[in-house]
Image (cartoon, rainbow, N blue to C red; front, side):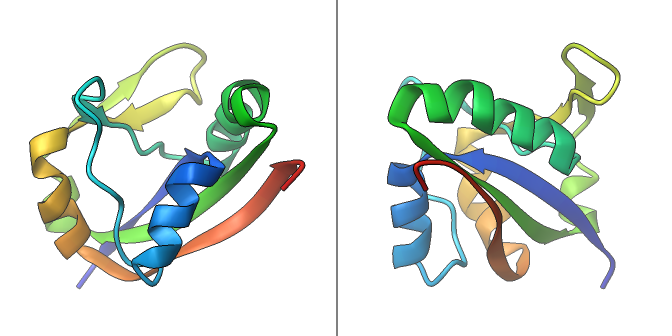
Length: 115
C-alpha cells in the first residue's frame, strides 16, 4: 500500500496524548479546532513549531507519520503563504478515520525550545 508522509508541529500537551496512544493516534480536536492540519514538509512544520508552539508553551516537537495514500487523496493540499507552506485540511470529524489509516508510528523528528 502506497503511503503519504505527513508532518505535524506539536506542543507538549498534544504530544503527551500521542504518546499515551503508543504513538499511533492523534487526539480528538477541541471544539475550537474544526480542522486537523498536517503539513507536507518538515521545513514548514519546523517553522510553525518554532513560531507558535515554542512561544506558547516553551517547547515544541516536529512529528512525521505515514498515512495510506487512498485516504489522503480525498483531500486537497492548500498553500497558505510561501510556496512551501502547504497543508492538508482534514475535517475534525474525519480524524478517527485518518488515525485508522496511519501506517506505523508517529515519529518525533525534532525537539525545539525547552523540549
